[in-house]
Length: 219
Ligand SMILES: C[S@@+](CC[C@H](N)C(=O)[O-])C[C@H]1O[C@@H](n2cnc3c(N)ncnc32)[C@H](O)[C@@H]1O
View (tube, rainbow, N blue to C red):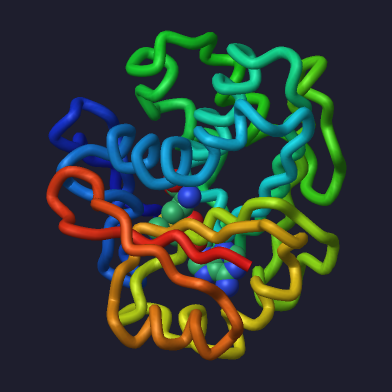
């Protein structure tokens, strides 16, 4: 069954998954959460040191994280962004037309539509410094190429325990280039122990509104 659209507290949309019974974002605000966890904690400091940033995401979902990076690329024209995302249960592109992200982010609706409409498995240069590729595939069976940043945006460990194990974190660790990092909203104790067991150095950072902590893990 199609996930259900709902409005979060910051006025941006999210989806509630009917199989897992969970929402794609915090009810306190989808955009505020994505900005806090993935843009601010994941990328902000790299914007002053890097000229090229590769990002691999688990869970394309609504496309919100990719759209925020597309917007970041527009504001940082001297940096090349390469965004690769994995999605096992895609949202129908027709449903994506209903998301109010272009309005909330004050960007062109086509930026969001291009992400959802692009072919699976093909790299698309959507603007001079933003290259986007999505794969309809299980993340754990997917990426092998080195990356600087992993956006780990799976459903929570209660819903998808297999995606938060030492083995899953080992997969992420091997993907990351020296100095690379993984960011996620999850701050569960067992998850952080699994990150350490996989070789990561773990940072506890203040969480987005409604959450005490989030996690950034460094190679
Ligand atoms: C918490 S939602 C977040 C999605 C997205 N980042 C967003 O902002 O809308 C988790 C997403 O991971 C996807 N997913 C779940 N298991 C997966 C897997 N093994 N590989 C790839 N994607 C997966 C789900 O279908 C869902 O779209």
